[in-house]
Amino acid sequence: MERVEIRVEGMTCGGCVNSIQNALNQREGVHRATADLENGIVSVDFDPTLIARAALEDAITGAGFDVLA
Image 1 (cartoon, rainbow, N blue to C red):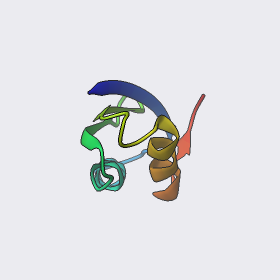
Image 2: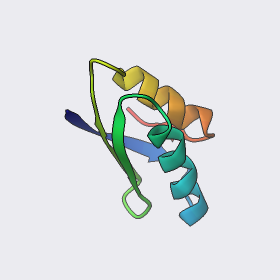
Image 3: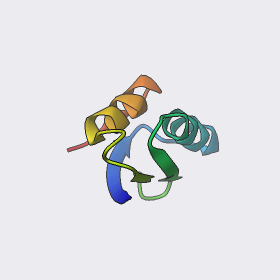
Image 4: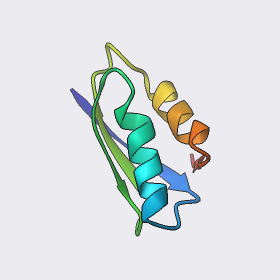
């Protein structure tokens, strides 16, 4: 299991947090995703043999948010 923190732009409310967490938690290989609205960071515990960081970022952008470098 690995943990990655991804900086996200566009989270403005609890609904945004739920959207991101749901988009990530539905992906195979994601154990837990937790979005921090105040800091604009999403922490993801995942199995790198099942899902890559790029796919995690794609799930976030697919939910309508921007991933920051």
